[in-house]
Amino acid sequence: MASIESPTQRLDSSTSQTTPVGRSRYAFEMKSPGLVDLALLAAAGAAGTLARFGVSVLCDRPALRDVPLGTFLVNATGCLVFGIVLGSFPDRGPVSPQAKWLMLTGFLGAFTTFSAFSFEVGRALHQGHVLSAAFIIVANNIVGIGGFLVGWRLSGFLAPLRGPV
View 1 (cartoon, rainbow, N blue to C red):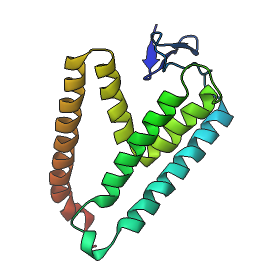
View 2 (cartoon, rainbow, N blue to C red):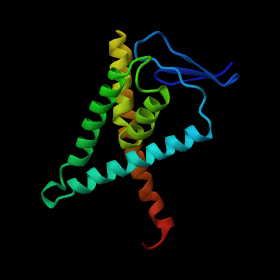
View 3 (cartoon, helix red, strand yellow):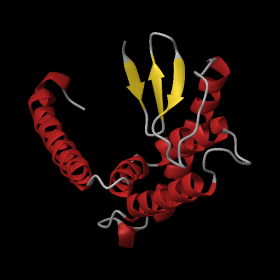
């Protein structure tokens, strides 16, 4: 039996049913997404992408070009909003599981992946899994930066294949 886990739910691929992971006050149930749910998720992702682009455009000033202020603002804002949404609307409440999923996975997932990374570390720390939190931090940074550097290096080898730009 294969299963896919998200921070708050487990999807059993053999039955397409979701069940909450643990009994955290942050867990929420959501039915398996249908086409409408996926379309809404895509729209939320598009809105998050446009918001990120807007912040980048606003921060693109000659005096700030050497400082990634747009990235910093997006990451800081995304983490703050993620925490507010997750903490303000536990289990049952005025916000449906679908709306919460769209905000966290759709909008904030496109706005910043750093908010998801921060949630994973924060959840591990909240559950007392300090070593897991440390592993998440170290592994994501080493693999992420290492992957970028390897890809950047490989692009130099691929440049002759592209021809003139």
